[in-house]
Length: 304
Image (cartoon, rainbow, N blue to C red; front, side, top):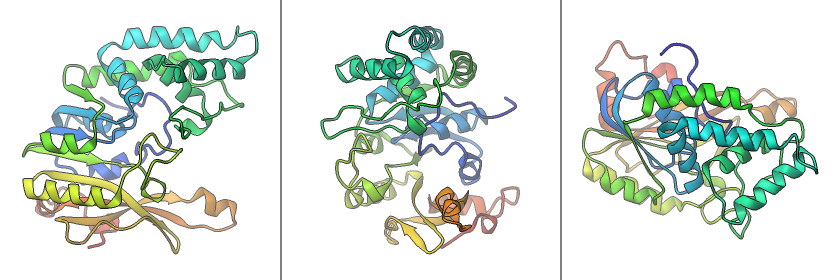
């Protein structure tokens, strides 16, 4: 498939723009890709576009996100039809399009956590940023400058994604450790866990928190099983580091990916580059080093 890699909707924290760099660290062919913290599955979609894996496993503890992905891939026409109805209703809503957003959000928080409601909230909310209150309710506000992604654009991308992944993909909304348990040799696990700076416990910016210690221990479990993995985790910008490094005792190598100029630093009159860390299991690194056609690891800011 030629052209840009499709995506369903804007999603803050997505690795869609970094996907080309991340894929340089993946084997050209492998059995199955597992994403325990899928978000909107940008890496799965990028891997499928290049037809690198035979099968895909998409998981996220946030079940409404999984509903979007499963419906988009397995029943794209149904998702587009229902999303279109909600999207068009905002223009006829008595209180205006902003009040319509709050109406759908209230329905969602009252239990109607359908794929189409979640998709509409993502398409209309500020920066495509999922936010939850202490009670567990979705509490992000609408973007007042726009009406959300049009059904036509959603449909174009959804049908492209469905064509790549339908019949090849399994879905679940489980704790990430259960995905580790089911991993087998020949699989590759890609992980983009919640940003650790705010996620050591339940946090209102994320559906679920993640303990640094528990996560590090779980990676040791993968090392013992001989499972290949790639992890997007900490990072740095200028002289500021974001999050703790994973323990050096793990059987992986750390690389830094250039994520571009920091928007925040630009606003402050500076020009600082953001680097995001990528931890790659040693067996993958050794394979890449033996393949001259692969991009040089040094070119991607290798830090060992």
